Structure formats: structure tokens, C-alpha cells
Image (tube, rainbow, N blue to C red; front, side, top):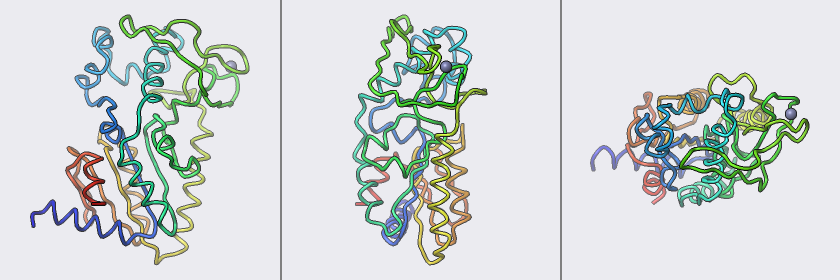
Length: 279
Ligand SMILES: [Zn+2]
């Protein structure tokens, strides 16, 4: 048995034995659902040729300044992604994790930097998900004139991808009628309304508290597709693994699979990793 097989076996056993499942995910989780990989400028520009012409990086596009300087470009970027995520069907790995998590005595909790709403779409309970960077399916005011966050519902944003402009009516604030934006934490973002994400975080802490009060409970942490460029998700997986006595961290990542001592790193894509652990 080679090292990868041994690691997969260890991961399988940890997942089977666990009383609780903590699922953490970065952008790599969606690649197997057909979502573009924004890794580096080359990956980003391949997904968005018109942005290659502008010569802007992902972090330059994900800057709230566009909503003030050029709302049609800002909404081209987010509107296109909103439409894409609405059309995307979460891959089978989501469903397998959900099935597993539901069977555990302490259930599951999801922590993700993805704003795409794919866990909810796959059937995960909205009350058991923390979206640390917010959600594209929720809007807020650009000013903001209040702390309100509202569900995007069926609101459509039309995007002419060739010229990279949103066309027609752009989403409006439900209070002041000014321009709305997605309730996503952007780069250098002072105006993000954080209370939805904060409330999710408070529910997560309650769940952790239950585990902490039951020191015999075993926790499996399955992290997928969380890279090092924005390490929020990796740090969270590692922090929880340090703080919960009986925990095993399983990191599934085709490139950045290095792990702290005692954890398991599997150099695989998200769906393949799940398939092989849950054979
Ligand atoms: Zn407003």
C-alpha cells in the first residue's frame, strides 16, 4: 500500500468514527461542478477574456470602488457570477457529504469562503453554514444607507459579456433606491454589512460549544479546495483542529495539500477526494 492509499484509509476511518463533521471549503470545491478556477491571473483571464483586455486581476475587480466609478462594470462582474452560480448544479460530492453529516450524532457545520451558495443549493441547512465572505445571493446598499441585507430572490442582472457591461436596470437599494451591491466582503471593503455572516459565526460557536462540552466526541474536519492565496479557510480548519481534543483534519487539495503534524493531506480534487474517502 503506498502512502496515498494509507492516508486515504486513515481519513476513511476518521470520518467513519467521527461523531461530528466540520466541512470547510474554498474555491477549489466548485471546480468539479464546472465553475471556473480563478487561480492566478491566467486562470481568471481564461474565465473572463474581457477582463484580460482590461488587464485587471481578480482582487482589482473585486474592489467595491467599481460600484462608484463604473456600476455597469461592477455589475457585469458580479451579475455574470450570480447568473453562473444560479445555473450551476453542485457536484455529487456535496450530496455525499450531506448524507454523511446528517447521520452524525452532533451533525455537521460548514465553513466556506465561497459566496456561490452551492452548499444551500445542495440541500445543506442554511442554519449550519458560515459564509465568511458573504453571499452573492444577498444584496445590501452600496452607501450603505442602513444595515439591511436582503435576499436577491429572482432579481435578474443582464450582462453583455462581450463588452463586459451590465445592461438595463441594475439592482436597487430597497430603502433609498440607490445602487445595491452583493453582500460580499470585497478587497479593501469598508462598507460590507457583516451581521448576516456574524450571526452565522455565532451559530457555529454554539455548535463548537456542544462539542467542547462532550470531550469524548470525535470530530472529523474535511477541508476541500482551500488555497494559500487567501488562507482564511485553511487557518480556520487548523484552528479548530488544534482546539478540539479528538479531531482529525483531512485536507483535500491537488496542489496545497501540506498539513500540520497529525493531519492528513490528500493531493486530490474535491470530488475525487470525497469519493475515495467515502468509497
Ligand atoms: Zn440605500
